[in-house]
Length: 246
Image (cartoon, rainbow, N blue to C red):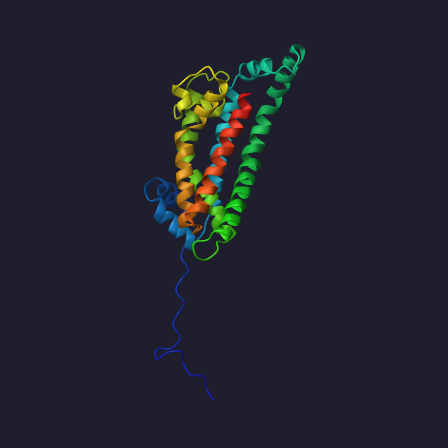
Protein backbone atom coordinates (compact mmCIF):
# COMPACT_ATOMS: atom_id res chain seq x y z
CA UNK A 1 0.00 0.00 0.00
CA UNK A 2 1.14 3.49 -0.75
CA UNK A 3 1.17 6.13 1.94
CA UNK A 4 -1.64 8.63 1.84
CA UNK A 5 -0.71 12.31 1.51
CA UNK A 6 -1.00 14.29 4.69
CA UNK A 7 -3.52 16.61 3.03
CA UNK A 8 -5.24 17.19 -0.29
CA UNK A 9 -2.49 19.67 -1.12
CA UNK A 10 0.42 17.49 -0.09
CA UNK A 11 2.81 17.99 2.80
CA UNK A 12 2.66 21.53 4.16
CA UNK A 13 6.03 23.28 4.53
CA UNK A 14 7.22 23.96 8.07
CA UNK A 15 6.83 27.54 9.24
CA UNK A 16 10.19 29.29 9.48
CA UNK A 17 11.70 29.70 12.91
CA UNK A 18 11.46 33.23 14.32
CA UNK A 19 14.69 35.18 14.00
CA UNK A 20 16.16 36.77 17.14
CA UNK A 21 16.25 40.57 17.19
CA UNK A 22 19.63 42.05 16.28
CA UNK A 23 21.74 44.27 18.51
CA UNK A 24 20.27 47.56 17.28
CA UNK A 25 16.75 46.17 17.67
CA UNK A 26 17.60 45.17 21.23
CA UNK A 27 19.13 48.55 22.09
CA UNK A 28 16.14 50.36 20.62
CA UNK A 29 13.71 47.94 22.22
CA UNK A 30 14.88 48.35 25.82
CA UNK A 31 14.16 52.08 25.53
CA UNK A 32 11.02 52.13 23.37
CA UNK A 33 9.19 48.77 23.47
CA UNK A 34 10.67 46.43 26.10
CA UNK A 35 7.63 44.15 26.42
CA UNK A 36 7.53 43.51 22.67
CA UNK A 37 11.30 42.93 22.65
CA UNK A 38 11.15 40.39 25.47
CA UNK A 39 8.23 38.57 23.87
CA UNK A 40 10.31 38.22 20.70
CA UNK A 41 13.28 37.00 22.72
CA UNK A 42 11.08 34.41 24.40
CA UNK A 43 10.56 32.79 20.99
CA UNK A 44 14.13 33.37 19.80
CA UNK A 45 16.53 33.98 22.72
CA UNK A 46 19.65 36.00 21.94
CA UNK A 47 22.43 37.28 24.19
CA UNK A 48 25.81 37.24 22.39
CA UNK A 49 25.67 40.67 20.72
CA UNK A 50 24.26 42.34 23.82
CA UNK A 51 26.91 40.77 26.03
CA UNK A 52 29.62 41.85 23.60
CA UNK A 53 28.36 45.44 23.59
CA UNK A 54 28.26 45.56 27.40
CA UNK A 55 31.78 44.11 27.69
CA UNK A 56 33.23 46.54 25.14
CA UNK A 57 31.55 49.55 26.78
CA UNK A 58 32.72 48.44 30.24
CA UNK A 59 36.24 47.90 28.93
CA UNK A 60 36.37 51.38 27.37
CA UNK A 61 35.21 53.02 30.61
CA UNK A 62 37.66 50.94 32.65
CA UNK A 63 40.64 51.98 30.53
CA UNK A 64 39.72 55.67 30.35
CA UNK A 65 38.93 55.85 34.06
CA UNK A 66 42.08 53.93 34.99
CA UNK A 67 44.22 56.42 33.05
CA UNK A 68 42.57 59.47 34.65
CA UNK A 69 41.87 58.48 38.28
CA UNK A 70 44.11 59.69 41.10
CA UNK A 71 44.64 56.42 42.96
CA UNK A 72 46.18 58.08 45.99
CA UNK A 73 43.30 60.50 46.40
CA UNK A 74 40.87 57.61 46.03
CA UNK A 75 42.51 55.20 48.48
CA UNK A 76 44.32 57.26 51.13
CA UNK A 77 41.17 58.41 53.03
CA UNK A 78 39.86 54.84 53.05
CA UNK A 79 43.15 53.37 54.26
CA UNK A 80 43.61 56.03 56.92
CA UNK A 81 40.20 55.19 58.40
CA UNK A 82 41.17 51.52 58.75
CA UNK A 83 42.68 50.98 62.22
CA UNK A 84 44.20 47.66 61.14
CA UNK A 85 46.49 49.36 58.61
CA UNK A 86 49.57 51.12 59.95
CA UNK A 87 50.51 54.50 58.52
CA UNK A 88 53.81 53.08 57.27
CA UNK A 89 51.91 50.58 55.10
CA UNK A 90 49.62 53.07 53.38
CA UNK A 91 52.13 54.35 50.83
CA UNK A 92 53.18 50.82 49.91
CA UNK A 93 49.56 49.73 49.40
CA UNK A 94 48.84 52.76 47.23
CA UNK A 95 51.89 52.12 45.04
CA UNK A 96 50.83 48.49 44.56
CA UNK A 97 47.29 49.53 43.65
CA UNK A 98 48.60 51.97 41.04
CA UNK A 99 50.29 49.05 39.28
CA UNK A 100 47.38 46.62 39.42
CA UNK A 101 44.27 48.79 39.15
CA UNK A 102 44.31 48.80 35.35
CA UNK A 103 45.03 45.06 34.78
CA UNK A 104 42.47 44.02 37.38
CA UNK A 105 39.91 46.41 35.90
CA UNK A 106 40.43 44.98 32.41
CA UNK A 107 40.13 41.42 33.69
CA UNK A 108 36.98 42.38 35.54
CA UNK A 109 35.43 43.77 32.36
CA UNK A 110 36.49 40.84 30.18
CA UNK A 111 35.90 37.96 32.59
CA UNK A 112 34.01 39.29 35.60
CA UNK A 113 31.12 40.77 33.64
CA UNK A 114 30.17 37.56 31.75
CA UNK A 115 30.75 35.46 34.87
CA UNK A 116 28.37 37.58 36.96
CA UNK A 117 25.75 37.53 34.21
CA UNK A 118 26.10 33.76 33.83
CA UNK A 119 25.46 33.30 37.55
CA UNK A 120 22.53 35.70 37.35
CA UNK A 121 21.15 33.72 34.42
CA UNK A 122 21.46 30.51 36.44
CA UNK A 123 19.59 32.15 39.32
CA UNK A 124 16.82 33.28 36.97
CA UNK A 125 16.63 29.81 35.44
CA UNK A 126 16.30 28.05 38.80
CA UNK A 127 13.63 30.43 40.07
CA UNK A 128 11.87 30.23 36.71
CA UNK A 129 11.71 26.45 36.93
CA UNK A 130 10.32 26.71 40.47
CA UNK A 131 7.78 29.46 39.67
CA UNK A 132 6.93 29.20 35.95
CA UNK A 133 4.00 30.96 34.33
CA UNK A 134 3.31 28.02 32.07
CA UNK A 135 6.18 26.13 30.46
CA UNK A 136 9.48 26.09 32.38
CA UNK A 137 12.14 28.34 30.79
CA UNK A 138 15.36 27.24 29.17
CA UNK A 139 18.72 28.49 30.43
CA UNK A 140 19.17 30.35 27.14
CA UNK A 141 16.00 32.32 27.85
CA UNK A 142 17.11 33.03 31.42
CA UNK A 143 20.60 34.11 30.31
CA UNK A 144 19.10 36.43 27.69
CA UNK A 145 16.96 37.96 30.46
CA UNK A 146 20.09 38.53 32.54
CA UNK A 147 22.04 40.17 29.71
CA UNK A 148 19.71 42.23 27.53
CA UNK A 149 18.31 44.61 30.23
CA UNK A 150 21.91 45.72 30.85
CA UNK A 151 21.87 47.48 27.47
CA UNK A 152 19.97 50.31 29.14
CA UNK A 153 23.22 51.28 30.91
CA UNK A 154 25.13 51.92 27.67
CA UNK A 155 24.32 55.68 27.76
CA UNK A 156 25.59 55.81 31.34
CA UNK A 157 28.87 54.16 30.42
CA UNK A 158 29.27 56.52 27.48
CA UNK A 159 28.56 59.50 29.74
CA UNK A 160 31.15 58.37 32.30
CA UNK A 161 33.76 57.95 29.56
CA UNK A 162 33.05 61.43 28.16
CA UNK A 163 33.23 63.06 31.60
CA UNK A 164 36.54 61.33 32.31
CA UNK A 165 37.95 62.66 29.05
CA UNK A 166 36.65 66.20 29.49
CA UNK A 167 37.68 67.07 33.05
CA UNK A 168 39.78 65.87 36.00
CA UNK A 169 38.00 63.29 38.14
CA UNK A 170 40.38 63.15 41.10
CA UNK A 171 39.81 60.03 43.15
CA UNK A 172 36.20 59.44 42.11
CA UNK A 173 35.13 55.89 41.38
CA UNK A 174 33.03 55.33 38.22
CA UNK A 175 29.77 55.14 40.15
CA UNK A 176 30.33 58.67 41.52
CA UNK A 177 31.22 60.49 38.32
CA UNK A 178 27.98 60.90 36.39
CA UNK A 179 25.10 63.09 37.69
CA UNK A 180 22.58 60.24 37.63
CA UNK A 181 22.30 59.28 41.31
CA UNK A 182 20.91 60.90 44.46
CA UNK A 183 24.38 60.73 45.99
CA UNK A 184 25.71 63.07 43.31
CA UNK A 185 23.30 65.81 44.39
CA UNK A 186 22.79 65.07 48.10
CA UNK A 187 25.82 65.08 50.40
CA UNK A 188 25.51 63.81 53.96
CA UNK A 189 28.04 63.23 56.72
CA UNK A 190 27.17 59.55 57.19
CA UNK A 191 29.32 57.43 54.88
CA UNK A 192 26.75 54.63 54.96
CA UNK A 193 23.85 56.87 54.01
CA UNK A 194 25.98 58.47 51.28
CA UNK A 195 26.72 55.01 49.88
CA UNK A 196 23.00 54.21 49.80
CA UNK A 197 22.30 57.48 47.98
CA UNK A 198 24.88 56.61 45.32
CA UNK A 199 23.23 53.19 44.97
CA UNK A 200 19.97 54.91 44.03
CA UNK A 201 21.12 55.50 40.48
CA UNK A 202 18.67 56.12 37.62
CA UNK A 203 20.07 53.62 35.11
CA UNK A 204 20.43 50.88 37.73
CA UNK A 205 16.79 51.32 38.70
CA UNK A 206 15.81 51.31 35.01
CA UNK A 207 17.74 48.06 34.56
CA UNK A 208 15.84 46.56 37.51
CA UNK A 209 12.49 47.49 35.94
CA UNK A 210 13.59 46.00 32.61
CA UNK A 211 14.79 42.85 34.39
CA UNK A 212 11.33 42.47 35.93
CA UNK A 213 9.70 42.79 32.50
CA UNK A 214 12.21 40.32 31.02
CA UNK A 215 11.43 37.79 33.72
CA UNK A 216 7.70 38.15 33.14
CA UNK A 217 7.64 38.12 29.33
CA UNK A 218 10.89 36.42 28.28
CA UNK A 219 11.37 33.82 31.02
CA UNK A 220 7.60 33.66 31.62
CA UNK A 221 8.01 33.68 35.39
CA UNK A 222 5.28 34.33 37.95
CA UNK A 223 5.15 37.82 39.44
CA UNK A 224 6.37 36.62 42.84
CA UNK A 225 9.41 34.97 41.29
CA UNK A 226 10.21 38.02 39.19
CA UNK A 227 10.07 40.25 42.28
CA UNK A 228 12.41 37.91 44.15
CA UNK A 229 14.89 37.90 41.27
CA UNK A 230 14.86 41.71 41.02
CA UNK A 231 14.74 42.77 44.67
CA UNK A 232 17.33 40.32 46.02
CA UNK A 233 20.18 41.64 43.81
CA UNK A 234 19.16 45.23 44.68
CA UNK A 235 19.38 44.47 48.40
CA UNK A 236 22.73 42.76 47.90
CA UNK A 237 24.02 45.76 45.93
CA UNK A 238 23.01 48.17 48.69
CA UNK A 239 24.54 45.86 51.31
CA UNK A 240 27.80 45.70 49.38
CA UNK A 241 27.85 49.50 49.14
CA UNK A 242 27.42 49.72 52.90
CA UNK A 243 30.30 47.29 53.46
CA UNK A 244 32.57 49.35 51.22
CA UNK A 245 31.62 52.49 53.16
CA UNK A 246 32.82 51.00 56.47
